Amino acid sequence: DIQMTQSPSTLSASVGDRVTITCRASQSISSWLAWYQQKPGKAPKLLIYKASSLESGVPSRFSGSGSGTEFTLTISSLQPDDFATYYCQQWKTFGQGTKVEIK
Amino acid sequence: EVQLLESGGGLVQPGGSLRLSCAASGFTFSSYAMSWVRQAPGKGLEWVSAISGSGGSTYYADSVKGRFTISRDNSKNTLYLQMNSLRAEDTAVYYCAKAIGIRSSGEYGIDYWGQGTLVTVSS
Image 1: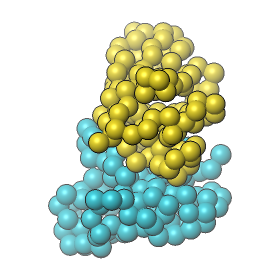
Image 2 (image 1 turned 90 degrees about the vertical axis):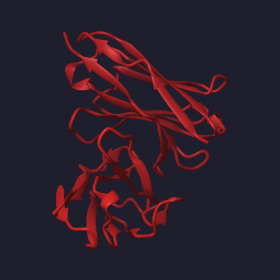
Image 3 (image 1 turned 90 degrees about the horizontal axis):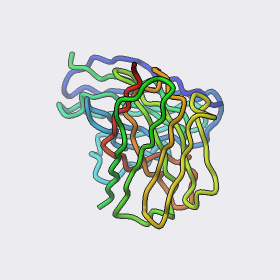
């Protein structure tokens, strides 16, 4: 089975900061990676699919990149609404999650 | 508007059974793979199971293989998860989820999620 390793597990940042989260696959997954945002008590929300495609309605400050085994989710300028937990997913495997906290 | 509405969660004793349902609307249900994803209290997301649009292909996490059965009734636009031999570690919120891409198996990700239903396994 493919393993997904997400880092960091926690990230402290301020409004306006540029934030990068990394997800590494144990073997090549081409570009079949999705990113989600989850807030407490809510279902996850799709942000990025196929590694770099922005889901409709998602702000353009979110972007994804990478292929093969290494992927990144970048928030170009962190907004108050962005403090949440972020997950990567390759089909049957989710990353461990990254909690973005207020610094 | 896509809507996914789970039901069937609740409290069950270890070794017991439960069947979750997910009523779907707002899209051509039979054209899309569907998944169940769970989240234990305070923990991350765990993929549980998936089924192709036709129902002909099913996939399971090792942690539930042989105990859980995923199925769908395309005439009723409903997804199911039959959970048997439940264990304390199955306690979680269970989400019904729609796969991205017509006729995919779910490998492209999930674009819509239900609100979740809580399953608690405890004596």
